[in-house]
Length: 304
Image (cartoon, rainbow, N blue to C red; front, side):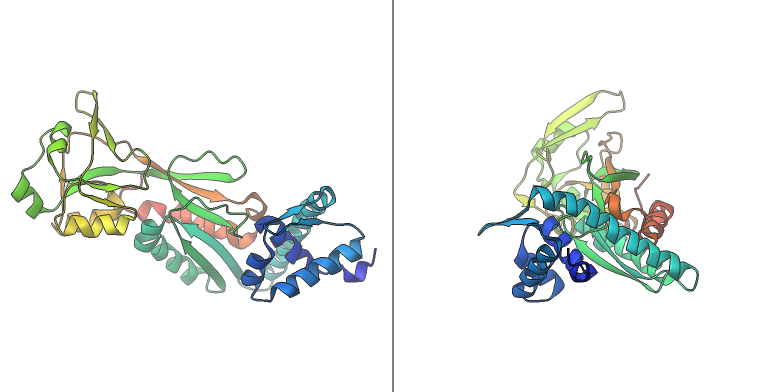
């Protein structure tokens, strides 16, 4: 083995290709040409004396030797980051970049504010914030942690429950004046609904009534959206009734632009979780952000 050719840069490139399964994707991520990525991998394989990757026209996969090398390489890179954090901790403020993903509407309305406050406390830490409602592969996309609304069972990630997002039924005063106010959940079948099509089960609402009885009500309407901010705008415009998270509309309720309906009937809350890539959980700056979010999440309306 030519140890001098086994550089940190080549190891980092190999790890990202192994995680993403694509040379072109890593080239874009690193802002280099694909030929540069290919050359770094070839030089690393030549130095080690073993094929680490199996390349096809559509995907790159790990060989048996590559899987073993990847596991060790991840450990090496994590130790390097930890060593850097420890050295910095003795001489200055925490620094570096954290890659974070967040549910889109929650990110726009609330998580961004929390991140601003975090960076005010730790000005040397950069945040790369990606907003998406898709369930992305955090390791594959190079993300350190993610805020997600929904029950989650991914056992490969660390899960930190942050609370429950309370939900309620709302509509604009003009809509209610024109169409009437539902008195019981079953009245919703005669109303226009604003439905989130990317939420599983949104076509059937389940309420717990004041008598602890369960009410299952079909929910539809002419308007179906796949983004919480679009539902918010439709509600303001008086296009119908929606089941929504309190944090999405709390300011509109306080201003009288929306009204809560069916107050005696409770929609089940939705878990708010922090997902953490295990290999990143011990990095000092990531731990700082995790602790900060746990500390501050109670300031978000409707998270209990």
